[in-house]
Length: 314
Image 1 (cartoon, rainbow, N blue to C red):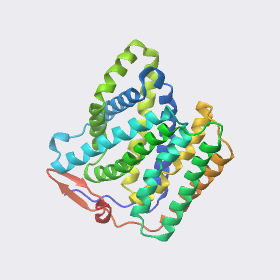
Image 2: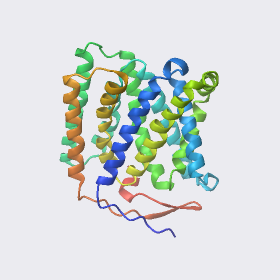
Image 3: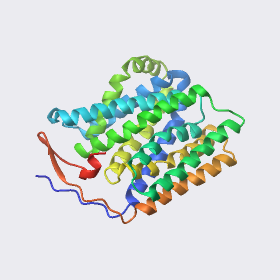
C-alpha cells in the first residue's frame, strides 16, 4: 500500500506554481502568435501539443498499459478538453489582443469558482475578479480597437473548455501520479488535431527557421504551465485555483504590451490591479484553512495517491 502524501501546510507553494504557469503560458502564447501566419492557429495548436506530448512521454514514461478503465476515461476527457481549449483560444487570438482574450476566457474559471464556493468571502473575491474582467471588456469597447464579435465568441467557447480542463486535470492528478496522465492527455489531444497537424508539420519542414519557435511554444505554453498547474491542483481546492488563475489576464496584458506592442491603457491597468487584489484576497482567505490530508487509493492494478474525498466529488 502506498504511503499517503504529506499535506502542505502553506499556500505559498501552489501560488508560486500558478504564477510560474501564468508567466510561462503567456510567454508561450506570444511566441505562438508569430507562427499563426505560416501554420494557422489550429496548426500551431496541433504542433505545439504534439511536441509537448513527445517531451513528456520521454520524461515521464507512463505505464499506461496498466491503467484502469476509470483512469483512461479521465485521461481521454482531459486530453479532448485540453485540445479544444487551446484550439479555440488560438483561433480567437487571430481576432483579439492577448490581454482581453485571456480576460474573457477567464469567465470559465470564474463561473466554476462561483459554483463550487460555499463561503461569502470567496464570492466577494470572485466578484472583484468579475469587476476586473468587466473593465477589460469596457476597454475593448471604448478603446481604439473594439473587440471582434467573432473573437469573443471563439474565446467564450475556449472558456467553456477551460472549465472542463480544470475539472478533468484535477481528476487525473488524483488518479495518476507524476506527469504520466498529462503526457498521454497531450497525445490524445494531438491525435484529435491530427488533420491540422499534418499540413503544419509539412510547413515546418519547408521552413526550418520556424522550428525553434514551435519548440519554444510547446515548452512554454504546454509542458511547463500544464505540469505546474497539475501539481498546484493536487494542493488546492478547485474553487481556490479558479480565482488564483485570474492572474493570467495580468500577465497576458503585460506580455502583449512588452512582446507584441499591444496597447495597455488606464482601464487595463485598473483591471490588472483588481484581478491581482482578488488573487491576493483568496490566497489570504485560504491560508490556514488546510483541507484534510490526501488518502491512499488503489485504482485497478496501479496504486495512486488520490485527492481528499470532498475534492474528488467536485
